[in-house]
Image 1 (cartoon, rainbow, N blue to C red):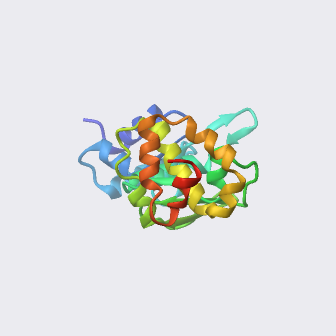
Image 2 (tube, one colour; image 1 turned 60 degrees about the vertical axis):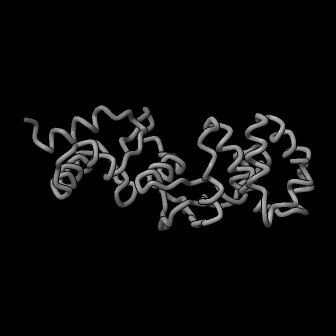
Image 3 (cartoon, rainbow, N blue to C red; image 1 turned 120 degrees about the horizontal axis):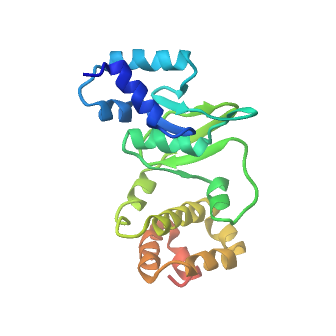
Length: 208
C-alpha cells in the first residue's frame, strides 16, 4: 500500500500546472489519512518547490514559463477558498461591472461578495477584500435549474444594480438592457424575482 506521502505526491503530480487546490479537498480525496501526516507531506513538497502555499489551506502547483513562475490569478484562489467551505464568491462593486463589460475601470485590489464568512487575504501584492452578504446568499438560491452562464449573469446583474443604485443604473440602462436581452425567458423571470425589495425599481426600469 502506498504511503500517505507518496499518495499526496501522486495527487499533486496529476494536478495540472497552474491549478489551485485546497487541503480539505486533498484530504477528502485521500480517504482515511491523518491531517498531520498530510500536512507534513505538503511541507516537503513546498520545500522542494513542487507546490506553493498561497494562504492557509490553499496551495498551488505552479505553472512555469521560460521567464519563471506565472503568477496565479486571484479568482482561482478565491474560488478554491470558497468551495472548500461550501461557499460561493462573486466580484463586487466595480469588479462586478467589469465582469459584465459595463466598465473598463478597476479599483485597486480585488473585492468579492461571499455567501459565507471568509477572512480577507493577499495574493502576492494584491489585497483581496471580502464581504459576507446574507442578501447574496438568498439571491443565489433557486437558480440551479439554469445553466451556469445564465446563473452567474443574473447574480452579477443583481450585484451591479445593488452597487449602482437607481440613479447610476439609469445612466447605463441601455448597456444593461442589452445584457438582460441575452437571457432566456426563464432566466429573465428569475431576475425579476430577485429584483425585489430595495431593487424593485429595476423591474420598472427594465420592464421585468
